[in-house]
Image (cartoon, rainbow, N blue to C red; front, side, top):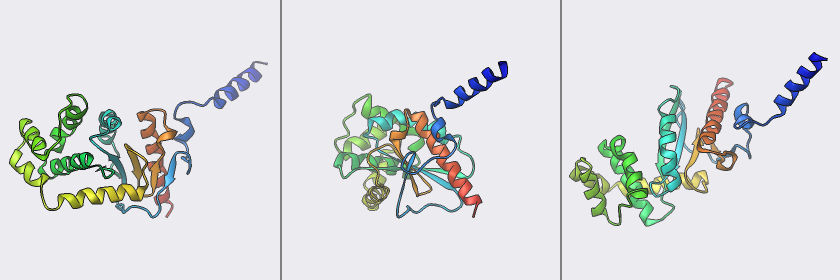
Length: 214
């Protein structure tokens, strides 16, 4: 009798749907991810995770500290890249240029989070290029160097290329995550940002297994 009760209890536990348990073993197409076809260019020696985002997105602002901690602990075979998206909105295109210019001048690590805070908490009006450059200078960066990168000849092409990648991935909004250029994580399958990253981890594991099977 005791053995029967124990078996029934184990069966009951196995029937419970725990947070994240639905995708931990094997993520499914149409549920945890959507296929990107044709696939985005992706490195062969790493499993690349791309975050499509915008400084203008309040959800991206909330997600930033969480995904930053996650990215800092990635295994050696996984790389992380961020792609700023404008959705053809002039204001968001300026935000994309901020990202690329900070990256070019080496100030991204220092000011990345500060840009989110300035926009969403301090309500700094980045309504002109001059206002952006002045703000960067007020944060201790080289305003002249940043201004040259921000207004550089190649900047517009970088913004356009980022938007093209987002369009090719068929993202519906930001933040959105893509793995190995082939898998777009389905945000609706996650109940939290942490769940979103758990799904991403499971898709990374899927890609890793696929590569081992070749």
